[in-house]
Length: 134
Image 1 (cartoon, rainbow, N blue to C red):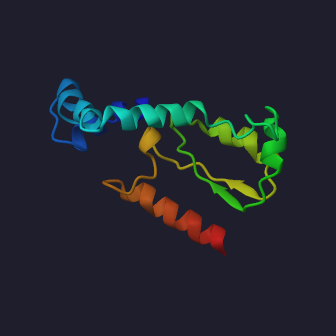
Image 2: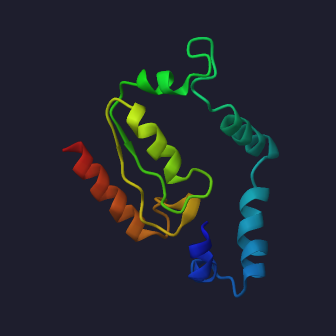
């Protein structure tokens, strides 16, 4: 989640937590500890190895790899995502054949766009996809 999410007290109002410590103990930690460590490790390894240009074909030339993508794309990063910032997608846009960037105007950080308990983000996604599909 973003700093704004915590400042708005959503760690308290979106859970049954009375304090930040309660949120971390009762919600944050169990959210990770109930998942198999191997799955979390695999996810981290996927993020580390996610460079589409790190192969024999593109030899580290990310621009060439991006230019080769022909799929039409709607990029919807969260405006406050600290893992995958909007700037990363914005840097890719000039090298994509047919892509549009629409950041999700949300303080939910990395969880922006998740429809669970977040009607505003869900509505933004619905409108963005409907508009884009026209």
